[in-house]
Length: 359
Image 1 (spheres, rainbow, N blue to C red):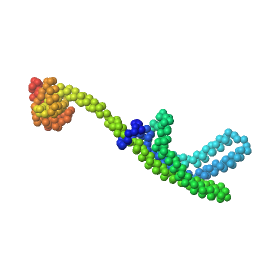
Image 2 (tube, rainbow, N blue to C red):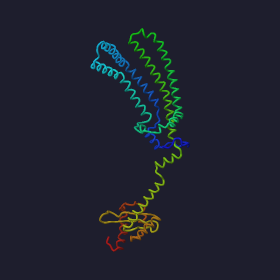
Image 3 (cartoon, rainbow, N blue to C red):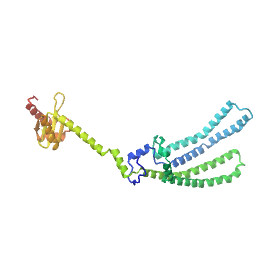
Image 4 (cartoon, rainbow, N blue to C red):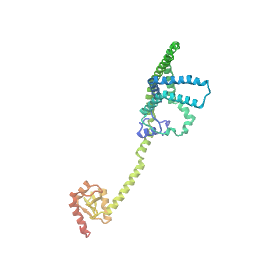
């Protein structure tokens, strides 16, 4: 990663390679406050939906504790009785908390994936000594993100306080009449106030976290932007260093040139234009169905082909129509088409006669 404090303006849009690098490092645009707000609303909804079941479980727990538990208090406790009581408490607690825990977990997973997509990386868990640097910590506290976190904390305190105040005042006003009610009515009234309180706080936090999500996405896009120098380095990495690419192309050309020279040396004939085109052919009657083009070129390359052929005793035959047809229609390595068999056969027959061979 390039230094974020290089001082150079970040005006270049982030490349896909930079985005992938940020994701691998665990840096994504997301709002943790949004996850927390949705989880709170999900837990409250699950608690409201399972209220009767949950309160029955709690009530049975209280009855067991104050009934059977108090009865045991007059006798000696045994390991067996303690184990039964502990197991009962754990079962009731699990059944009461299961809806809330499952709803919170599912909403937390879904809300995270909705913000960032599926992401699995252990990079943020790797030791990083830079995080222990006091100067970096001070920079984070007094930097833009630190100031934003402070403003968010103040806003959350104000908004949650504004939401809590009327609900708590309503509960305070009703508290005088609660003690005259039966225990079930008291539990129902308290549960109603608690659910109302949690929903109100959750909705208020959801509004704040939605604003925070927009801000976090904006900040993330700003961090992704690159300086001109970083953009150049990124292009070098993604497209390859031009010097290295040039070297590779040079090596490929040299290798192709050596292969062409070897092919021309083994050719049976070179058909010429005579000056602008040259096509080298090879034919093995026992192993080939038809003659094959092993090299071809125009202008400078044609002259080079003819030079190599002359140096290695390969005959050059001038045939303008055939040379043009071969050059235009056939790629290097291909067999000649059927419509050129006769023309090529005449050239090969002429070459074999020159060499004293029989076609």
